[in-house]
Image (cartoon, rainbow, N blue to C red; front, top):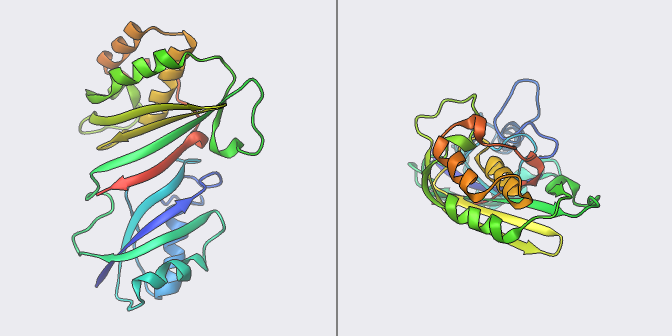
Length: 244
């Protein structure tokens, strides 16, 4: 039995997220079905993590086991034949049997894109969140420094899921301003559901002057999902990289 690792890029606009769901189109099921047409046997595709409905990926990592003897380098073009245009396999390689795209992952990198203008964008609307308010970039960066490090991020998760622990190491939280676009890049050893979108939401509130630095500290220390504030839309979020 061979273990094949895939690098997947997708536009999540028209999908109900990564994980297979009944009566809804998902990335996992769509790619799984395409692989089965190539290897001509049942397989199960494991992903590095779930991306929610509308979330995109530049480099999602997945793996599956197969008895097929197809050369690894041939898998991308073969699988892409059966995939829609908004999903593409960019790479494939055979890995050791103990490799698991989710459990072997060390760090994940996400990017959230804001289009900061009074007039919204038409061409890039599926890949960014339009924010028409003037933002104080310096105070947002100050807030990002406060959130960086090892913390209990319970205030920045959805309240309907039970996690064994909500402590995560946020290794990097960069904010880059390029013309009308603002890019938030977050790297951590794991993310709670909605964690990135709620962190961006609270930093936007900080940038708009709706909360202060001291209030941000209080929200973090409260460990209460009800205090985390706005969850920004999914369309601005993209999984950039998974590190092993």
